[in-house]
Length: 347
Image 1 (tube, helix red, strand yellow):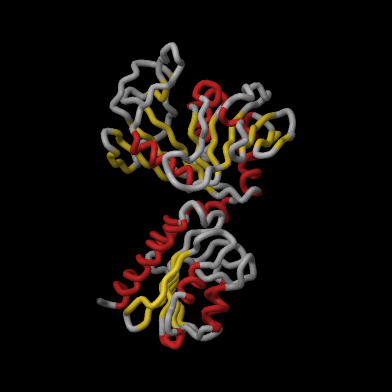
Image 2 (cartoon, one colour):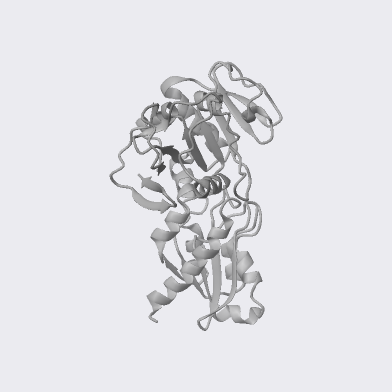
């Protein structure tokens, strides 16, 4: 195995480890690290949760014979930090352990790092290689990168539509929506929710569907719920207002709130979404899922304020109802989940 293939092999293990932090590491990035000596992994770790030890710390702590560190290589999917935050700098730890070789997947876009960790390591005499599997590393932490470069959350638009292009059809006497997907799709959606900081719906979706917007079919934390309610007219007995999880009720009237239910006053019209992005950035929310309805989804599309669209295409024919949002579907990737097609579009 040549050097490049060797580096990629161990970096792929870093990425596998990093993914274990999905849904818990945010707003920090998902990071994995492995320590290698004589071609063998002698320690590995990942960043479990914001405020806890970073991947490098866990990987180094897992090495049973510290005497091997002085002739080892540490692989890490994201540049080691160089500043004091909730934890000490990982670059300082690597230097203190006299690890001579460091292989980095990508530079950290966070302003307090952004190359400083790499420079500190090199100044201390470490041999540092940067950019191994960089595209894969960036893809894994696309929400973290968007948050720090665009100063807003990574925005995912999600909906299910019928084969004839409707997201909702004519309802029966019980007013229940037609289910267009399946149990596997439901579990996948709940996984996405667990990995996101917030989830948003519009007034009509809240009123007609009475969604819970929690994580019931997956394991993980419930996201912040956000609903548009301009004049605070939604009934208080909706699931969204049960105070079981943090909820923002966007309106133009006031900022009153009680535990887990906060009225958030914003301008309406064209200024509403930018103002909301600032609120979410200030709240350290680095990924937002927008689940509907069509008017809300289309407002994000028309504003160019989205990064990824996840669209379930059902075999069901509704024959009429609420039309699905309009988006260019020509550049998406497709996979099948049972009998439902999932189209993924990234900008």
